[in-house]
Length: 152
Image (cartoon, rainbow, N blue to C red; front, side, top):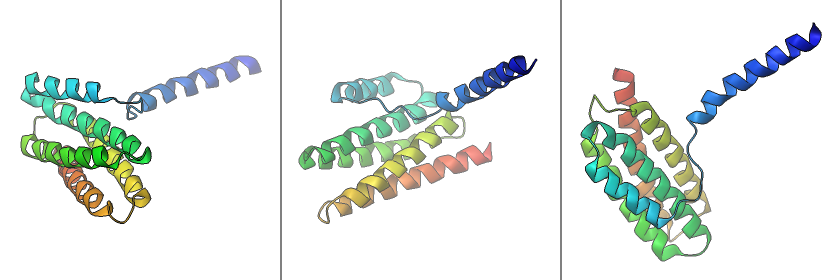
């Protein structure tokens, strides 16, 4: 009897852990081709889906920027940070009340802001202003997404 209850607890715990992982941000190595493909996909996507796709794009671009910066490729990282700010502005403009997967977009934006703050702490003094500006813009969009989620 004891072994049956142990197995039942193990199966229940495994089942509870699956949904948590399903909403975790994707941490696979992003390359510029995937980012370009996602940008092209956003142009063809319906307006309701663009918010999540923009958040996904910002997240992937941030991960690539962090890898570029840590490998010493600061010029590409700075260009990517500027592009992230432009995409965050597009996300801000396109956000509406009826966006699909808005909560998932907010989670991605929060994680992206966390990763940018990590990058800020690891960056040199000369690179900090651009990282700070990007982080501020992502935080602003994240706050707006959170407010949209709470309104629902």
